[in-house]
Image 1: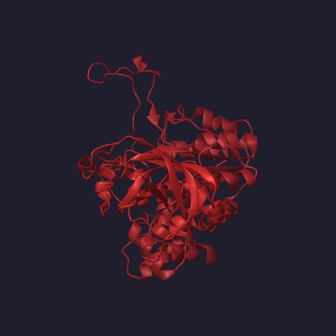
Image 2: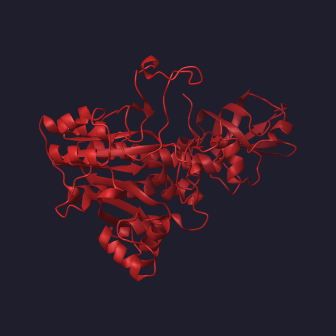
Length: 447
């Protein structure tokens, strides 16, 4: 069985004189008259393994894949404790060195834009492989948290016939040649179909039968937005809980995100340390863990902003500059803003007693802005119907959703976590396109 470099380095000197197999690709080569020193990596860790190669006349290029059989020995060098003395080497995919020079794998600094242009090779770079390992570990922790907390994972539809948020630009799904025919009855589903912006509404129906559920899947928005915080295709984590009010929801969201950030600091320490070029990653992590998220109403946030010279009126949506001021300058803490005006939020949010606001909440982080958005859902059928009418939505498309209130109802709440934004915050990346394997944005499909 082949050993990973991560497991080899973890065992370290315990493996001295033991014979092993290891796979990897060549990161660097140097040689003298007697032997070659080949540095390989296999993606399991940011750290590399040095291989001592003797009596090898074949050309070994950087980027070439190797399978090596050999014996672990103590290293005579200062940069590593152990190294592998090769006995047999199998070489895969040998190619010309001049072709290598045209890729992002050559050992020099590349712009993030250049890396994205060869996104199929980004995984072999130290920078991107570290981010992907962090991303994997965060995904693992999310599933672990909800499993331990008694949640059930539900897979909700990617293709839907409605806009969950009520005001999103949607990607249309069709089998028609629209230049020749535009008859919906001839289309695959016989009606309009879109890529989903959220699994929430279906998640609600599941929570009303299972109690506590969560979804973890892709979402799509066809908004012409090229900001460092937006993608056309992204991933959402959406828990939903029966018998939950807004206060319970805010507690769950804070507890959940602190759990993830606390655990990732430990299990991804080596990768985070490598990525922490500006000494900000661990400072950001400590800020989240060491402070209680401050809770303020939307109305209170308005008063603070107006008092500090911002030209904004009650009823207007918060912009990134407003969020940045509140989080990074005024309160110096992650914040939860709640009780938003009705017109700023979707139809499904529960109307408060003042009949002006809804039981909505957003968690705002430094640098990335809104990272979680959620609410208590409107469980009262009559009020839900009036909201659907108020927002001029088609009740026919939402009949099944209305029936989740018609045939028995209960207060329930949930939220959506922008998974990619969480990774962006944890890794301190300036652009969200650096934290997803193959980014999709307006006018850009990189592979």
